[in-house]
Structures are given as structure tokens and as C-alpha cells.
Image (tube, rainbow, N blue to C red):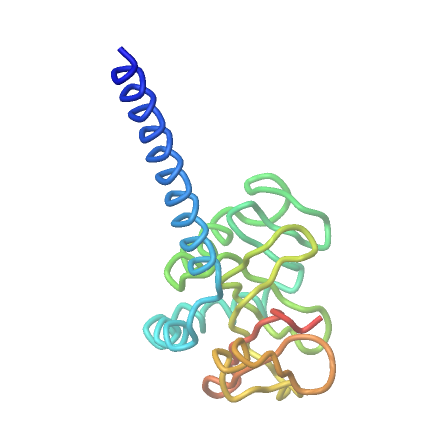
Length: 187
């Protein structure tokens, strides 16, 4: 009888140990996946996508330069001088909004925006990760003036965390007035 009780106890302990090992393995795999999937996209992939969809980026730039009332837009709606709303509400044409959304999808963009003033510097947001005020971004912008904080490679910048002196975005030249940019580690 003692032998049977010990055997049953050993089987239970082994089951519990196996279950605990499996739980730890699953949690470890999820953490590994999260760490490796939450990083910014590789610059080669971003540049390849830009070249493949350049016409969409150019059209977005043209639209953002002409629609001076826009601050930013995405699938959540439009922010203009008159507030934030989801079309067809507000006074932004639904056809124009739908064109923006279609071009963002084609280009892999998550949102778009522009600055006020003489230099609109249209921007297409490609990636964002984080929460609240700690969110990091990667995008492509058309810049009227050459940015002062340039790096030769965003991938190298991510590895080294060495930015040129100053504040704001760190940029990598793509072609013409087009630049990849990030605000990751620039604060």
C-alpha cells in the first residue's frame, strides 16, 4: 500500500512539474516574441516599400500640401483647424478622406500629417510602439529643408543610440527631399 501511495504522489509531482515547465516555456516564448516583434522595422524594408509605392507617397505629399486645414489623419478620423472628427461628420469631404485612407493602405502608412506654416513637411507614419507619452515612431517625410540631425543608417542608429547634437527627429536621407525618420531614443 505504501508503494502505491508513493507512486501516486510521484506521478502527481511529475505532472505538476511538467505543467510548470510548460507554463514557463510558454511565457518565455511569448516574451521572446514580444521583444523581437516590437522593435522598429528594418530600414531596408522601409526603403523597399517606399520605392515600390512611391507614387502613393508622392500623391499623399501633394494632397497634404494642398489641404492646409489638415493637421493629421488616419482611420480614426481627421484633425483639422476646426477640431477632430470621423468623416462624414465635420466639414472635410468624405471622398477626399477615403482617398487618403486608400493611399495610406497602399503605402503601408498608419497615418499622415503636416506642419503649419511655410514648410508643410508632409509626413506618413509607418510604425508606432509604446504607450501614451512614451510612444516611439518611424515614418517618411518630404522635407523642404535638409534636416540637421541626419544619420547614415537608422538600423545603425538603433544599435548605437548615438544621435547628432540637438533635439527632435533623427533622419536618414532616402532620395530627393524624402527622409526616413524616427523619434526613438531622441528625447
